[in-house]
Amino acid sequence: MRSPKVRHLEARLTQVKHFRGRVGPRYDRRTVRAVRSFQKAVKIPVTGAVDARTLERLHAVTRRPTRSELRNWGFDLDSRCLKGRVMCIDKTTRSLKWVVRGKVGMRLDARFGDPHYPTREGLFRVFKKSRDHVSSIYHTPMPFAMFFSGGQAVHYSPDFKANGYNGTSHGCVNIRNRKAIEKLFDRVVLGDKVVVFRS
Image (cartoon, rainbow, N blue to C red; front, top):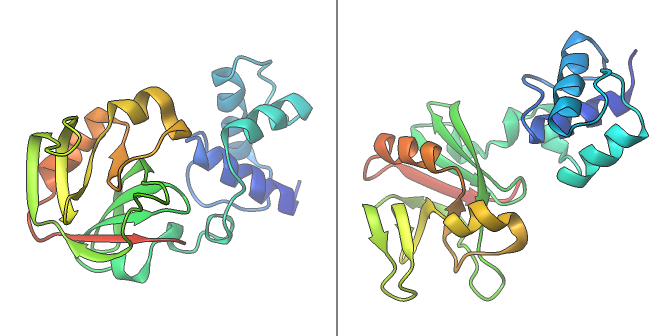
């Protein structure tokens, strides 16, 4: 089966990490495997076929795919992320990608500040790292903090892990996967680039 709807389906399955690779219009074995994996995860009958219930559950936990996601255009990488070592942070897809010489090594869910405390966009450099940082303003823990613009940093957030996108930061880039941010913290060095953008 070939249909533009399959591309949208695979893009949404990619968002929840059940589909791997380039999305396309063919409903093939990879698509069936991804659908079965998603159905098993949300505890509905595992058939590999997309019915109304499967679509309803999938739409509830994903967002409308961007043009970049649908077309595999560099997996939403900003051109400034293609050289060197970069934390490539996309506000549209709410993700942080660790990119080295144009290759994505890690992808993490990210959360940002609200309109009162916006996360700054642009090209920055990591100028300070603090493994067990505590905010001097809000007196809250900011483990694995990597500062890139004033007091704004990429760091682990227990609130993001507990409440997801129901909350916001005070301008920092929140990460909810503690093990992954710890690995990233150990890889990033002072001077590495940080690109914050919208795809």
